[in-house]
Length: 482
Image (cartoon, rainbow, N blue to C red):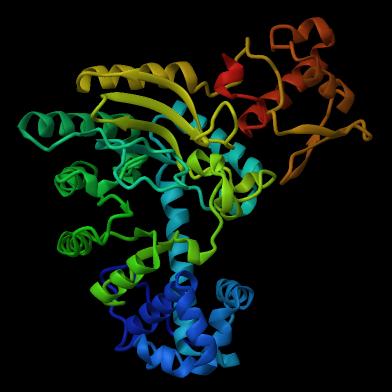
């Protein structure tokens, strides 16, 4: 059986040619997906095209069907996950090794999600409800990609790039938080507060949101401080990798030195993709995902932020309104800070709509002037909004995307939305009793005793409602809650 090596582990020592196989396979897919000219040339003269791109030594013509057919490629990755010996059925080494690397990144994503659980039990319970809510809201595919990071920090106000499809509708750049003497002290003090509040989960934070990291000339200094306090080099996504090639080269060297796992370059044009490939070897970008966001890639954009409002031909590049799973790019269930404005928000992903056009809830927001006031703001938000148990005065309503699908069985209430169908066991009361609680729109735990005079029936109903609350099935939308 073929041996595989963990390439995101700096201590791994794969054999000669192993890293090149994976890196070249990755580069081929980036070029194929993002460059329509490359696709045309590959179709007319595959051998010369691969040779011209420096890929022929790794990828042979016989390997192309596995790479070019997404369904075949996904099936190969699934087979790897299931423990099948791909080499035994003649799958080329470069394919099996690439699939192993893809599987490694998927496992890393799951690890990050687990490591992002805050140490504060109230906040952890709130986050778990948001994880459950998003799982049903977005469906298995999209929700599995959400790590629900507990923290994102913006080091500028706005962004200079101005992508037409920005799911967070980043405003134009208007200010920067520089790493001068006073700011450096404030920054480290704020990091210490965040670490104290979130525990080890704080290390899963990122230093960007509706911003371009490289807009801040001191971005790398802030990363060094984050690494020093939190113990982890934060992941970076940048759309400006080609703005200053030497800076990007130093950035990649820093990432390797600090055992960074995966970073991302957003690719906005074919020219930018070619410049990235010309400037950096495939091996040096092994841990960098080149996200081909350019028009030629044909990858649809999430319907959130600016992408939800575009007109003309660009509308064809945005997912349909019915596709709830692609209505948000938010990935934080926790806190969003802006160091320029000195603001902190408590946020969580949601489907983009008229109330939340950016695809995330803002549960609360407050300004701070220093580490002490930040600490107070975080404590207040956690106490007010992270109720581990169903509040006695909260209205008992299903989420707006969930509806009662069936009460045909007296002991099972069927609820569903566009992605999921779920059965709620009704013991000690009927499914109609539970459906009526939700349909009234005015019941709370306090009003239920007047409806269910029998104590055993009441206790059974309350127990079920509390479980549904923990599952994220009850409505906690901040607008409707207000």
